Image 1 (cartoon, rainbow, N blue to C red):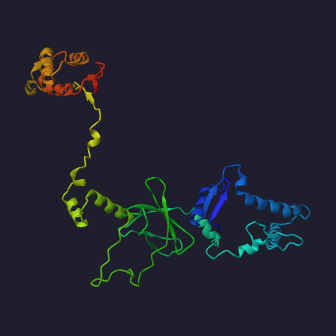
Image 2 (cartoon, rainbow, N blue to C red):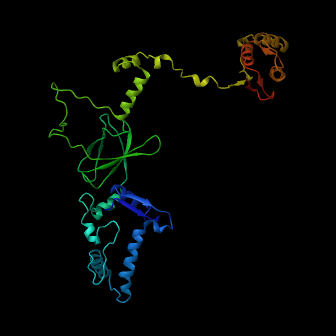
Image 3 (cartoon, one colour):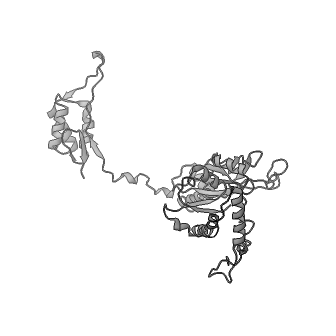
Length: 361
């Protein structure tokens, strides 16, 4: 199995089943632009060699079956790659090579780690239909997952992986190569997911206990902090300078303000130009006469005198028009406070009809 496939945007290549299979096999795939076949020139050159030196001979000696064709193709390929074709030099002549070499000679340099063998066809079929699953990170930074190659669910430790926190939800995909390995995907704030390869934690004794767990009465071991927890500790030290960890913990419990109380969390509201809304006149619910409160009704003139006296200025023409239109039958005395509050805002400009004024400073 290769580690990278570079191909065109054919419908077969871009099918979800094919991509799903390649994800499980840890094969990275890239697509070049349509019509740009030269992007994979090495492949095109290999095709040209096969067409001109092998397939061209079939015109003079037609094949009778697929098996016969495959047998001839394999024999030719082995001879070409080993530089064994009579009267033909098929070695690679490259500037970087000290001397020409056959392709088979170069192939011998591949390592066992690089030479990944494709699994059985049945396994590949299952992987094409397999889908990723979601798991929630446990309090000990582990997840449980049933790998297709395992008989039971296995425990995978995510300790030390950046971006992973308790109760996070991660996407899990089984991988073919390795010891029941899985690939986990952790979402990030910028949309670019973090991807990790993890193998199961098998550090247990015959009783299911961690081999490196502390022995009660003999030693103590604390769980290490994650990257997120380290960042939180650093932020606490900035917010509560010159304090120890214990002092910071006590300060939080007592709701002591951070940054020595100098932080104004509402400062962003200071320069907002709020609109001034004229009080809307609603319709009162009908009630029995003996239950209705006796509210004095002031004439417009009396109301204007009270309002101008409180706000220390005369009303504008627009304000006068709106007040007269709204309270042509008089102003209830219990509405005066609201009106005075409205007119105490900075000089407002309106059209006299909307009932909404925009403050002008």
